Length: 259
Figure 1 (cartoon, rainbow, N blue to C red):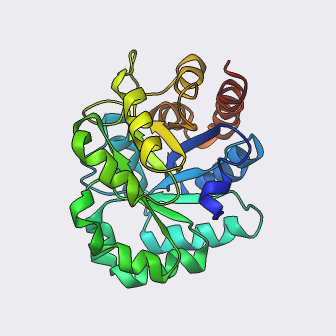
Figure 2 (cartoon, rainbow, N blue to C red; figure 1 turned 90 degrees about the vertical axis):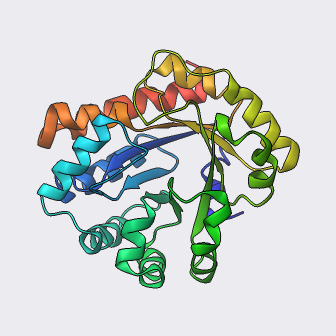
C-alpha cells in the first residue's frame, strides 16, 4: 500500500485543499501542520497559477493573492521540505500542465520526490494525454491522480482501470465552488469505478458543510473540500489558522461518524 492509499486505510478520508502562498507561505506551512493535527488524511496544495481553468472565483482570487505575495514553485518546494521535517501527512499538488511544463517536467517531478510530495492532480490533462506526465511520475514515484466527471461516461471504466492512488470524482459540471445541491450522478460514477478496480474514490467540487460531507462518504471513501476552506482563509487572512483548524476538525468528525 502506498502513502496515498494509506490516507484511506483508517476509514473515510477527509481531504482539505488550500492554495499555497495564500495569505503567505508561512501561514500555509502552519495550516498544513494544523490541519494534519486536526485529522486531515491527505492535504492538497494548490500551486497558484494565473489561468486556473477548473477553479471558481474563490480559488482564482486566492491564486492572485498568492502570486502577488511572491509565491513561486521553488518557494513552495522549499516550504514542503520544511513541513516534512515535522509532518508526515500525505501531500498532493493540485496544479496545471502549463506550470509543470514551464518549470520543466522532469525537474518538477524530481523536486516533488525530493521535497516529499506524494501525488499530483492536474485537471487540464485529459486521460488520453496523461502519457505526457506518467513516465516522469513513475520515475520519481509520484502518483498521478485521475479525475472523473459526469461527462466521462463510457471512459470511466478505462480511466479507473489505469488509476493510481485514488480516483478524484468530480461531483458536478463546471468549476470548483460551494454548492447547495450535489449531483446524484456521482454515486453511479463511484459504482462504475469500483466494478473495475478496488481503488479509493474521493468526491470533490462543491462540498462545504458537514452534512454534505457525511452524505458523500456514505457511498465513497472520502470528501475533498477546497473553496469553503479558501473562503475562511480569505475572510481571516493572517489570522485564519484557528478558524480553518476548527472547520477541519468538524468536517473530519462528520466524515468519520456520518455527522
